[in-house]
Each structure stands twice: as structure tokens, then as C-alpha cells.
Amino acid sequence: MEVSTPSNIEQELLAEIQVYRDKQKQWEESKRARTNRRGAVFLIAILSVAWFLIVVSALILPSVLPSIHPALFAINAGFLLTGVLLGLYDTVMMWSEKKSIEKSSLDYLQTKVEEDKKGEVLLNQLKQNREMYQQKINKELKASFVLLSILMVAISSVTSSAVPTYKFLAESYAAFSLCFVLFLLSFAAQAYCLNKAGSIQKLEGKQPPVEK
Image 1: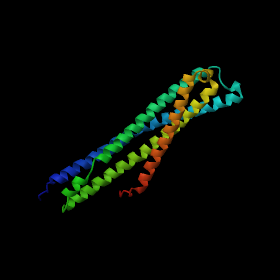
Image 2: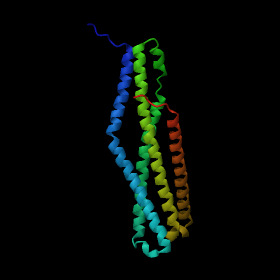
Image 3: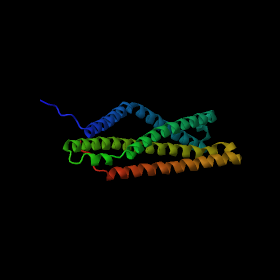
Image 4: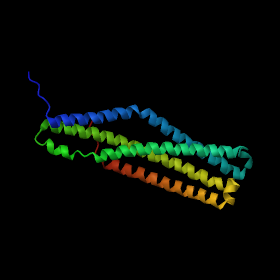
């Protein structure tokens, strides 16, 4: 029995399908690293908010604040910087992958598979694989933006509590201005992240469900 050889377009479609299968496989393999990274960012945000509550409580009960609080504040600032870098890395990686998918158009393949039933089946399969992968990217990108917004809340909270706690910030115009600018930037970044997460949520709502 003679076995039919796939046409050039069918081979191209099979290759594209394999590309998205490989991407999804790599995505699953890197899931633990992403989970650990986001867990670290979330823990940093929680610890920073806890520190903020301690500092605020110290305004009423000064004995609550440890004697080594300047060192603890510096350590917390270092943790926050680490959290920002981890959060940005996670978000930029997701955003880059999202844009690469959006730039790769399948329209040129549509014209090639006209009147080719097997080619149309393969193209539909490719579209499903791509849509499933894109939905995973959008879901995790939204989670990254939400996590970054939580971290920005922690930064703005710690920044706002630093002025009444540390005299050098209140006495130095440059230090106070820097602290105020950092507060505004973190507040604006938080609003931006929530807006991006909301826009991704709306985009997901408009997309048709993927047939599995």
C-alpha cells in the first residue's frame, strides 16, 4: 500500500504545530521556577507590609520598634529591590512572549490550504495549539501584573511610613523629595499594573473558548 507523502504546506503546518507543542512543553518545565520566583516576590511584599504595620504602630507605642530598626529598614529596602527585579523579569518575559505570538500571523497559511482538506485540518489544529498557548501566557502575565501591583503597594506603604520615623528624611529636602518621588512612582506603577491586568482580563473575555 502506497503511503501518501505530505505536501509542502502540510509539512510546514506540521512543523509549526510541533513548534507550539515544544513551547508548551518548555512552559510546563519552567513552571516550578516561575512559581518559586513569584512566591519570593509575594513573601517580600507580605514582610514589607508587616514591617509597615510595625512602624505605624511605633508612632503610638515607640517601644514596639526594635532598637536595630535602621538596619532592618535597610534590609527591607534591599528585599524590596530584589522583589522589583524578580517581578520585572517575570513580567517582561511574559510580555515578550505575548508580543512574539501576536506578531506571528497565520493569514499567509490560510490562502495556501484552500481546497486542501487535510491542510485545513492541520491549520485548525495549529490555531488551537497557538490559542491554548496564548491563553496560558495571558493568564500568567495577568498574575505577574497583579503581583507587581501588590509589591508596589508595599513599597508605597514603607515609603510613606519612613518620613515620620526617620528624622533625616524630614530634615533633608533632597531626601524628602526623593522619598516623595519614590512614593508617587510606586503609586503610579501600582495603578498601571492593575490597569494592564484588567485589560488582559477583558481580552480573555472576548476570546472564544478553545476546543480541546
